[in-house]
Image 1 (cartoon, rainbow, N blue to C red):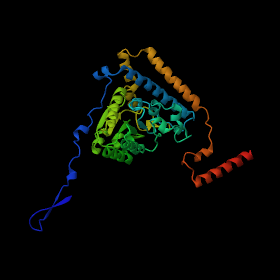
Image 2: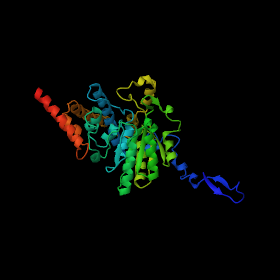
Image 3: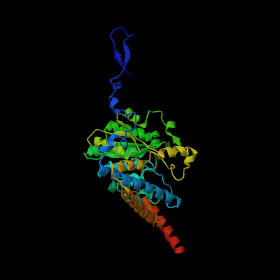
Image 4: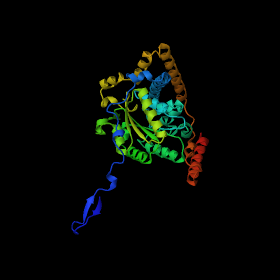
Length: 380
């Protein structure tokens, strides 16, 4: 509180008054999300959706579902250490990838391998981290896809930093950061949103609310009306969208990306979806949710929703469905072939890509390891 001096006696010389900073910086009303998640499929708006976009979304959804199934099978075969499936969330993954231009950046979480693949990353390279070969099996700068982030929410401040730097440089670049509902309970989430709003950074935050943070339901994480409502506290718009409606997700994300690109600042989008599979192959989801709940969500499957729209409009027939399935199976076969081949690993790679120029300590450690490997080879 500030203190204002008043005329009169010394005893009544001061009284506390609010400083100017207490006044609202922004009208909160335009920042509030709608009461219900935005939808396109099953509404009149679907009739005006671009047929070419619908077919592309469908092909990517089918390929994504097959990708999730194949990667999950690879964990059972010991070819992957772990795989967090995004089955049921494919509309969010594909929508995020297709909403960006080539010059933009995607900042994925560990569950967002499908988004990276839909953006053009090789399916094998997207799984390198989860196989345990390299931290990142691809060049992030080449693909404009940041490394898959296993620690919760740490990629969000990175996205803000890149977006802010691009704005300062005058680059026409937008960053899209993906996170799960569990990640919104991390401090990095709040710090990233605050910096993004204060700096008016061209960044879009996509929260995939799939119902559970491993076994913790959303109701035990937050008492907010929705996760999208959290945007208001930071001074940015919040949007609520049906995360299983691929067309709606693409539209809402596209609008947020365009807004950020023209200088409108960040947006927080909550996509309401559901994780059909367990958290990872190491999780037993039956311990905290009923099978009946999963079956209820199967009626809202993102592929079925879009397939129904395409069929009703005469844009998809049996031949089209089979063509999409064949393309997905070709991808899966190629993934199996490459993942079933044992990688050729060089232990000395441990010392590569740490610094541009190796430190004296690293050179010493590398020489020690090289000597040990040579000794083992001679002993054989």
